[in-house]
Length: 398
Image (cartoon, rainbow, N blue to C red; front, top):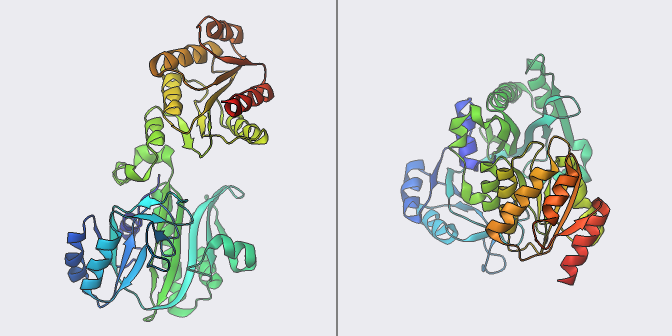
């Protein structure tokens, strides 16, 4: 689960992490009050969407060269004007795609005199089985570009989960950023507080870009992006309360209510599969034969008929879907359960696109018999390769 920048800074503030003062607003009428509260003389008006590249983004319909989604303002009047121009508009960035995201919230933050910019993030490092810091002196830039062009400028500092954060980790972060003296001590304290926040709140990603050194010699988190482990949210009702469903795909929200692993994609073939590995293989083979998958959907190993029905309804709710491929390898999941779920869903929502069903494994003959006896216009398939070719042919033919 992702949260907005201002929410992320609120979480970090609880752990003693230095962040700038700011006020979140939802209506332009609140902008002047927020500016007066912060006091100036410089403010930064930031669009709050779940996507990076806001500063370099552009609003749909804006003239070429117009201001982006992060704007420096040097008067309260300018804050208000920027708020009016940004709220309710669609911001397009490198991460939103051409459709963009509507800006429904702004964060008005006090300005900072920046002496240096750094990059710092924390993530779960699968190579070491623990949390790792990733730091670079190239702050404020696209870290992927830095990794490609100057990989030697990125430093990874793993933390052994058996010991947790230790002073030497903070000193390593300071060395990687070229800090010494009082700034090195700040980096050590910052690293410890960030690690504590990461672990206690079950984060999967914490990114600060940029981490800045101010003109007065203080380290401060000027931006913050946090993603949380969805499987651990039951332990954090306070974090769940920060969820902004307007930033999420409606189909993904509905899928989460049924404990379905669903991710919306941009293609035309809807997929219902059991098992993440088989689902990825299904997506790959659809692309191999010249079409694009409309979703990743794993119904899991022990799905009920009701869960399968919900999954099918979510797939058919996507107007881009021109065909559906059901690919089930029954182990714990039984093929007859899938068959009954598909039939129930079709009877509920109807079927206006081609449907290919490949069943194999536990109770496969019972499942195939249920499909054959349903009277539905279903295209059977013998294996995954056969299924992929048939659904691609059916979609292209349609």
